[in-house]
Length: 102
Image (cartoon, rainbow, N blue to C red):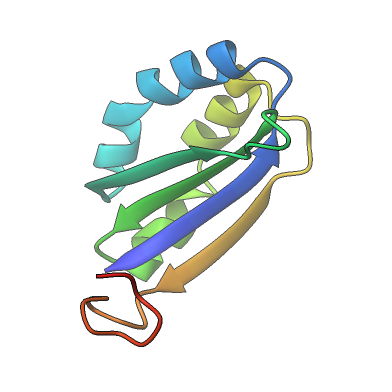
């Protein structure tokens, strides 16, 4: 599984969330898997971090170059400081991993 991490600031979280949710079909058509995490910074609530799962790195890379991606960024009110990273899972599970609460 590949993960696409997006980190950016948004002016209006409610507007951002509505646009993000309305883009589900396009993400799925682009190869996104079901696993999605949307996180907000507790100290700076305008900072949003999203972790999307993808089955294939090539599909994820193509998706962020698509017109659909650009339209989504515009609709979400992207402040222009979008950070994107492609990640892979380094540890399959945390149970018994040193430092992990049980």
